[in-house]
Structures are given as structure tokens and as C-alpha cells.
Length: 116
Image (cartoon, rainbow, N blue to C red):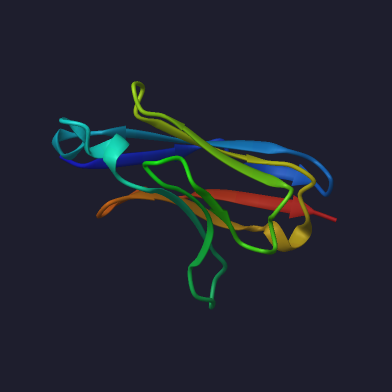
């Protein structure tokens, strides 16, 4: 069974920080699949398309959406099969459900709400 589980979402005031976690488990993540694939964090607001927020490739290259550059940081630990998204200086427009994705696996999402 393939599973990605996000955690760490919540309600925070503008300017605050949250750290999202993504834990991978299941047979697809044996044999180095987790380390060999890009870790992606997406977010989605109701009525809008899912947006790629940050990506971390197997070689260590990071990519960020322009709206989060300088505020968010993506990281992962291949031995623990864990990924993280550190979010600082949060803004109300960062409010969304955040999802992690590795290969064909998706988590269930974690809600982030930023109050003004």
C-alpha cells in the first residue's frame, strides 16, 4: 500500500511560521524509490487549480513558486523517507490545503489557514 501522510497544518497569524511534514510508507517506497524521485509540495484553494509550491529533485535541485520564494524551504531525509516544507512570513494568500507528492503517490492534504 502506497501512503503519504502530511501533517503540521493549522491556523496561524500573518507573519507566522509553520512546518509541514510528509511521511512516506508502503512498498513503492522500498528500494530507493523515495530518494530517486522528486518531492513536490502543492497547494489548492477551492475552485482553483492545484498549484506547485516547491520541488526538490533527487539531485538536490530546488524550485519554488515565485509567490513563496524567500519564504518557504523544502527539504527531505531519504533515510527516514520524510519531507518537509518550512513556511515563514506567512500571508493570508498562503491559505490552502497543502499536499505532498512523490512519483504517483499523493497525501490526503493538510489545511493551512493564515489569518490577517
